[in-house]
Length: 318
Image 1 (cartoon, rainbow, N blue to C red):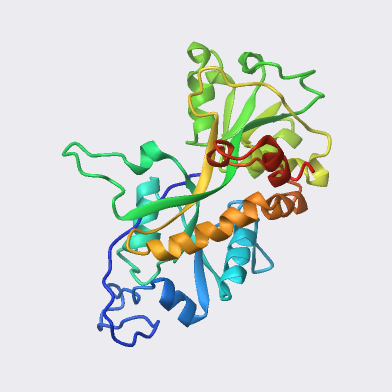
Image 2: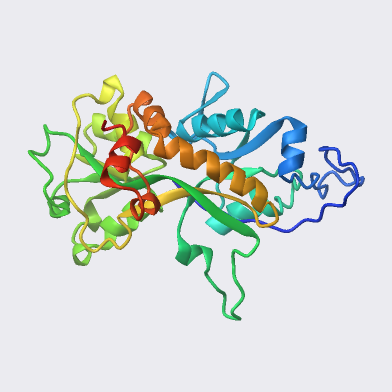
């Protein structure tokens, strides 16, 4: 659930270009050819960066990529008339690290591994234009664009342990599971002047937290809505319910999720953005979410200019 991004510059001469990786004799330092929009089309494939082992967004089943971000990547590639290729991302400590390692520079141990576009990037203007102490833009090497989903936090609970969850205050007295070192972890450990801290139980991911709830170790689990819905859809979790409570004191309760490309690959970004706009507004993306038993909400970006009728159509309500 550690999600993050970034992009860089490259030059393209007016000579015939082949979309192959450049070999300068050093396997660790080699970089791929600068895959601009025309080169992506000419190569016949699009490398889509998604997080590894991150259901329901991106994961593997019998060696095949699955998840909502994978399906969106396939739809984009199909619209572009090219093959979809998965680029698995192992999250680093910060979003900026993920952007550097997978979008514009490459990891120092494998600079050839770069995605053409990276999914599951928070679409946040404040983050996009963040500056360092010298006034330089931290994310100047990337372009954040194409919001395609609105995400929020969600709690699921065991009705045998709790009658209802109208407020997080109940977790002063009942244990709740979270993925370690995530915002739910920090929030539940500090909210209400720290009175819930001793009831917070840490797990490597939301899936493990649900297993703990089945075993009676915790009474509830907090995570991102899609993660919670993905687990609730499993037969082994059918006895659990989703809560309807809010999260007082939590600054970022709802946010848009988008994509990232190198800042020199804006033409590719514009093409993908146009495709995503159609997928969102025509309701195709909502259908993809429904097919995976996930709730879909139109990003706030669209809510600024779409009519209520158009939003309802995009969310599959008519």
